[in-house]
Length: 221
Image 1 (spheres, rainbow, N blue to C red):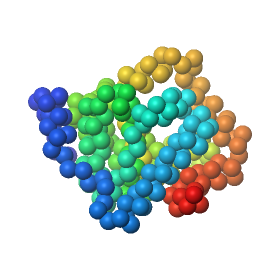
Image 2 (spheres, rainbow, N blue to C red; image 1 turned 60 degrees about the vertical axis):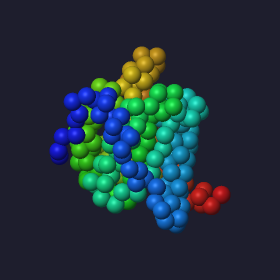
Image 3 (cartoon, one colour; image 1 turned 90 degrees about the vertical axis):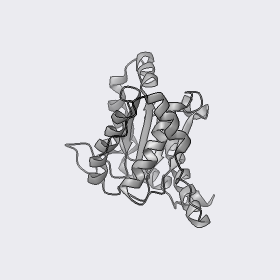
Image 4 (tube, helix red, strand yellow; image 1 turned 180 degrees about the vertical axis):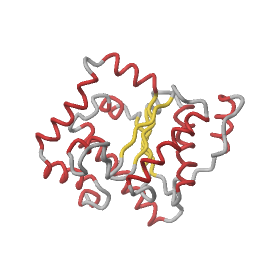
């Protein structure tokens, strides 16, 4: 991938941001409705699963102060998606933390196979490094078929990183460091999350995820 790094990161990011063309919103009303449904599904997932089950104890404050940015990309190719991800990467880097603390980019049209998505993560991480944002912005990943290495496909532990559509999550490294420093035991979070999911049971967990998906009955309410 051709390097996009500027000799002056701050100036380069500003110029990129000012000249970038947003493709994230379609001109077609029916397609916009589809994108809105995807965004609504992601927000349901954040509220009901991530916050509702307390899978991420740091999510609620960001959500409640409206500092979570959720974007739905209409990219039809991996290359176009990268353009959207870079735009959002630049946007969070240039925005005050109280305006955008963290960003979720949904990619409903591409990377539906987890293997392809998993390979694509390296492309996004390379872009973060190329723009000089390694150590500034951290990437977290979620997918409808997320599967941790060494687990069965139906293992409930995989649901800690399963989402209604493929997602890329940009976080500020400073916020992550502060959250870890102020939490009594972050190392116990994964084990606690698995215990929470196992207590709910496979049927309830899968039903909850189904209710969050685009096109569910919730979209009609």
